[in-house]
Amino acid sequence: HALLYYKTDPFAVPWTSKNYFHTNNWEILEMARILNEKGYWVDVIDKNANIADLDLKNQYDLCICLGDGNPLKNFAQLAEKTKKAKKVLYTTGMEPRLSRRLVAERYLYFHKRHPARNVKIQRMPVNVNLLDVAHDIDAFFCIGNEDTMQEYKKYGRPIHRIYPSTSPDIETKMSFEKKDSKKILYFGGSGNIEKGLDLVIEAVIGLPDAELYICAPEKEGEFNSIYKDII
Image (cartoon, rainbow, N blue to C red):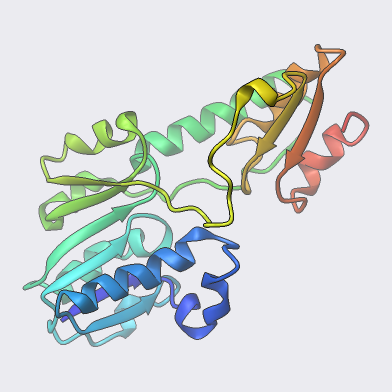
């Protein structure tokens, strides 16, 4: 009996796993499918659920918990309610405390360059010290590069690297000889400053022949107002 504490969206709205709006919708279904193949009966709890309100009856043999947001904040409660289960933290980014520090540094650097601008932090990782819950973690599933994995090694648990999935519609074979070096594509999700879009824009300004194409959410109004006369 396995418990997956992540998202229920792809089960409630199946088309979300087909349009690849976010690859984790497909990944969640795939995790459940693989566990089913291995003989597990799988329950899924949405990441916004309040663990304190749930009676889990200590019935699980395996728990896979998202290592971010609400699930990470609730991990200690989850561990208390699933004592007999092997618990895997499914991390999709850098170690939480390091991530918080790096995000803060990115905004500090932005405000040094634009002191008159007050831009709110869009995506600050949750403030959880994994040292407080490491004794309840049996293993990590880790999406990230070698630096990311290195940060989790200090907790002394097995780490299994997972590579990000992509839509099958994406063409991965490309020839850089056919590319125009003056055309630059930025592709990123929410959190423009965290991801460095401000640095990309300001760098391209100094390249008179360059063309910058930005694929990013338009919802960050404060960010957009700063660069609206440039892009």
